[in-house]
Amino acid sequence: MADFLLAAAGFVLAMVALGLVRILRGPGDADRIMAAQLLGTGGIAALLLLGEAMSVPAAVDVALILALLAAFVSVTFAKGATRTEVDRV
Amino acid sequence: MSLTLDVLTVLSVCAGAFFFLAGTVGLLRFPDALGRLHALTKADNLGLGLIVLGLLFQVEGPSAALKLISVWFLTLLAGATVTQLLARTARPGGMFE
Amino acid sequence: MNTATLYGLCGAVLVGLGLFGLIVHPQPLRKILAFNLIGGGVFLLFGVVARRGAAAGFGGDPVPQALVITGLVVAFAATALAVALLLRLVQEIGRRPTLRSDG
Amino acid sequence: MAFDAGLAVLVLGMAVWTITARGTFAAVVGFVAYGLLLALVWVRLAAPDVALTEAALGSGITGGLLLGASARLRPTEAPATGETMGIGLRVAAAALCVLVAAGLAAIVVLLPEPAPTLAPPVAANMAALGLANPVTAVLMAYRAIDTLLETVVLLLALLGVWSLAPDRVWGGFPGPRHDADPHGLLTFIAQLLVPIGLIVGIHIFWVGSVAPGGEFQAATILAAMWILATMAGLVDDPPVNRRWLRILLVAGPAVFFAVGFAGWAMAGAFLAYPAPYAKLLILTIEIPVTLSIAATLALLVAGPPERAPP
Image (cartoon, rainbow over all chains, first blue to last red; front, top):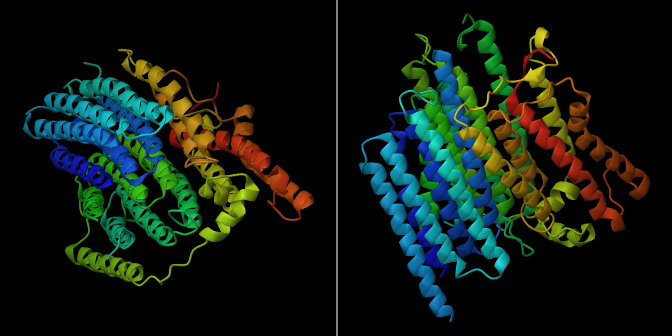
């Protein structure tokens, strides 16, 4: 079972990596910050699978923090994008 | 009993992994930022939900299960609202359109 | 090669990459970023030492792990101070500072 | 092993992106992704405590700080002419960096066998502290002096940031004012996430004695939630000349020092805890330290005062 969960975590990470390549090429900054979103969800999935595969229950706590802080980073981004809009006007 | 649970886990996790695949395909294929955001958040949140479901068959005790479910809920809540915010910045006029 | 060694090599390369960015990037914010990359590599080396020291029923030696936690907090404090200095400098001279002393 | 190799390649790829990306903003996004992947690496290295800290502080708050800074610096981003290095210097720098990386790699490969470890003495003394998490035991007892000095370092960094304020706004409000979002969306997000975040923070603090977690991780989450609330315009940072704020900032280190000196009287050494009260004393230190660190981290992100005091 552990091997299967580890493989699943690896697969999810690989999917995330493929998406990252697309995202980081842009063109817009909003595309880029999607990277944080994608990695947020994918990273949480990989963490949960990893935690179960390695019997590290604390991985769920890491996932919880990741979910919170990914949202925090995205809000910071949105504020930054807004600020430059205002500056330009 | 444990074999049944294992089979359920494998099925559910595989289905979840498939949705991550679908999300990535959408990300690679859709032409505009809003479309990509759409593909990404829907498919990946569903994929995460299925993976959480699969792991629920493995954990012991209600508190560990509750924690897993709350991770998924938090991701959904945060994802749904934050994606709105991001979509507005992706529009030409930014948030003050 | 075991897992710990693999991540140790990863940490070594990260230090090299970060050092390169720190030297060649003209923009101060990019230098701060590169500095944090070096930090990540150094912490990873500590993590490898901790993992190799697994004993007494622990997955890793807790002493280096605790040092990394302390290090992460101090690295953040240094980054915040550097960013504040940079923003103030830009505010003062009205444009991005350069590497040159006449800038 | 294949999983680890793939993860290591991803981490390195993100690091390369952070260095080579053309725009600063894209580089910062790469850095956030790098921190997130490092959190996975820490789980693989059996260090969940560090994974928590990396996810919250190394990736989360540092990412937010740098994203904010890159947004403010965007108008000044275009490089001045003649600023980039010549090709010769670049090659020399690359050679130096390859040399450093190769040296470190050689050290990693040649690490002594069997590996030295301090795990057994930590395990032997943990019971006396009443703690079941070895990393918390090291932070609060074995290397408590490090942790004490670290809280002081954070305060010094904050003093450094504050001292950058121009005279006319000294003692005023840190950072720019954040107005409430006209669409109400940001307000909604903050009202939704901040209470959840506070619960998660308290949870992480509380489990720290028996499971991965503890004061630094909890303080980081609390700080992130405060910053979120200020960004949404729900609350504003207090002016830095407020007395209660300054008491809050020094309370943690002060209590830590007080318990440390009391150790001389009670147990014969600085920061020694008398055995029956060890857990109680550690908790007495941890609560104010968590609150002080949370306030310090949030104000470090907010930056120097920019608006005159009321």
